[in-house]
Amino acid sequence: MKKAIGVVGLASVALLGACSSGDQVTVGAKNFTEQFILAKMTELLLEQEGYEVEMRDNLGSTALRQALENGQVDVTWDYTGTGLVTYNGEDPIADVDEAFARIQEVDGEQGITWTNISEVNNTYTLVMREDQANELGIESISDLSDYVNDNPGEFRMASDAEFANRPDGLPGVYETYGFEFGDAQVIEMNYGLNYDAIGNEEVEVAVGFSTDSRIPELNLINLEDDMDFFPAYSAAVSMTTEIYEEFPEMEEVFQRMADILDSEIMAELNYQVDIEQRNVDEVAEEFLQESGLLE
Image (cartoon, rainbow, N blue to C red; front, side, top):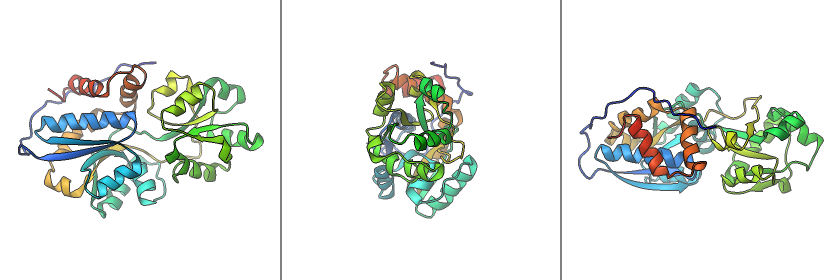
């Protein structure tokens, strides 16, 4: 069900005056709704401060990270869990503050600076249709593991290729919870189509993001991660240290966003795009204006 966005305080908008006309920043984004929204808000706030912004969006996690490392992207919103596990091969960390401190340390040695952690925690989740899960008594991933082991080949799962292969995705779930879908039971598709697949009863399980508004909209439930496998995926700014040192005032600009964003607000913004079919640019601009961040 749609919830009203609550604005946590109003921020006065004042030009920092720290950048000169023509300073250019490239903003990157991954290939799903939340990333498009975050990137657009970043673009609008930077343009308000006088920067010229180039967008490079619709990238997979690995492609975005490579673009950041080689300087094709200057700044992006990324997730602490992805930074630790996928980019750096670190063990997952469930604690939000610990995960943020660790990614700052690890990436700081590689010329990448993390700032402006928000209260958006877009961790992975496994979802089922609520009616089926209730009928089978499946509330947690451990319950799912028991059912799959007792009924091999019965359940099918929808997953994007990245989650199906990354260590903090299906391989890690299998190892932690002691079960495995057969290769024929994992149906890979672009993220977003997984919701269509489970909603149309083409699969019984699907991967999701915890802030995705299609979960309640389609009467799906998040299976409890009762063994705390999925790490914290707090949204924060990730930028090259070079651009951070050149334009340190950007941290203040992004903090305005970080101060008002949380998982509930992010889910509502995602809802407006995914369910109400509103334009990403309109949703981002409207939110910033209502929050007092954009003139």
